[in-house]
Amino acid sequence: MDLGFEGATAVVTGGSKGMGLAIAETLGAEGASVAIMARGQQGLDAAADRVRGAGAPEVLALSVDMADAESITTGFAAVNDAWGRLNVLVHTVGPGAGTFEELDDGDWYAAFGLGTMAAVRSVRAALPMLRAAEWARIVTLSAHSIQRQSPRLVAYTAAKAALSSFTKNLSKSLGPEGILVNCVCPGTIVTASFTQILKDVLAADGLDSADPHDVMTWVERTYGHPCDLGRAGLPEEIASATAYLASRRNGYVTGATVNVDGGSDFI
Image (cartoon, rainbow, N blue to C red; front, side, top):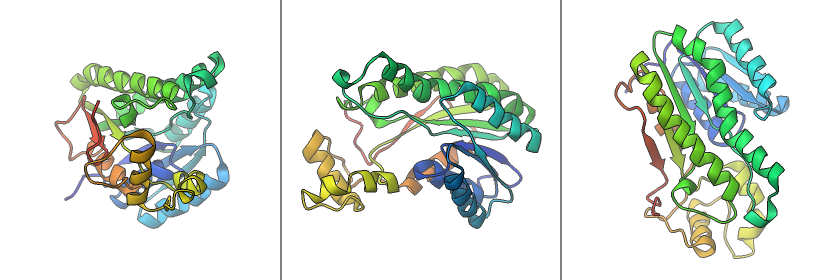
């Protein structure tokens, strides 16, 4: 299926690793030029090589701190200088974890700054370029925890729920202009950072943090959150769904919150 990305331009925030990198690679493989935004230049450069290797005609590796409004403005100004238009914005960044008792006001402000306001600022900066393009799409990445709560993700989930609401509302205001806006809610996804962080934790239970079936076994045991497919997901599975929603081929899906979670969206 031709998704219509040939000649298109795209920004992927948080595109240097995990789901963001998988999305950037997929868009590049489909023929889009891709700008990756993340903080660490070393990780950005490595990610840019991978996206070029996937087939992207042009790759911009932009060091942007998504917690800083000025940095976001500067990053998107660089995209405008390079391309002058933008077909796709995919926003993937999010805050960290913590229980209610562990978080103070500063932690909550930081969670909403990164989990919600980073998207607001990115859309604000990208919108003139999206409007200048022949066609345009916006996709944000929320989380299945907005439907299935976990005490360790209280601020994260609140910020992601606000992001989902923002995305839904934005679809209504931009729909008349032909800009389609959707939200993807990943379930438990086995990224490289997930595997590394939880390696010892799962190993203590005789499980492999790189094995999607073992990961879901641990999630079910620890949080009581099973999954219909019996395994965690992979970054490329999030990338596939995101790529369709972000594509020219998608002409009629907007305002949707799409679960990509293996059947675990039970409230």
